[in-house]
Image (cartoon, rainbow, N blue to C red; front, side):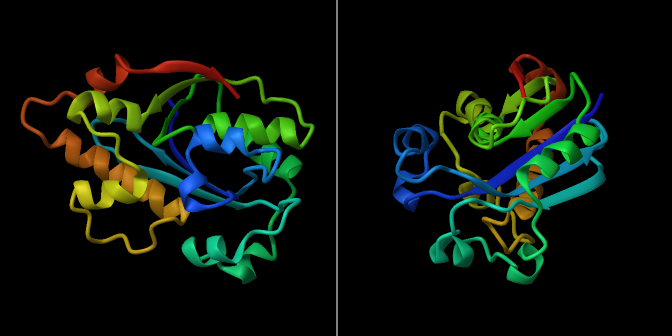
Length: 200
């Protein structure tokens, strides 16, 4: 099974208007273009070992607000080598296989589909098994936990750059490892029962 953890950084009007519902509501004012898309490929739920890391910077039609450049610690020298969305799709199309399992802490894949339409590109036509970790954790803990709050909730100390999507992928991975360590907690079975199918 191909398993990926995915996280994105995107343009928004403000921090208070960055929930998925609000991104849709205000998309005509400022479309939530993805400017960083990161993935970590992991082995399985027994070892949760990192097999590969992918980090893409994507050119946007809008300027990235200064507050987001600062918030995400965006490396402008690396971003100067950002690729067009069309080329980004081609690259992930080679990486993500049909029926892959993708773990996000939110609506990152739905946001990807929005960006695909925004850029007048065709979907990859990949059937994905999706785990929305935020929804999953709400069932398990009763709390909706944003990625930046996962760090505090699971007491993760070795990640500094929250809001960098590759670092956020690492936070999600460590959160899964913390869950797996709970006594009598079968992470694989729990995840299998909470998957949904989505096409990207």
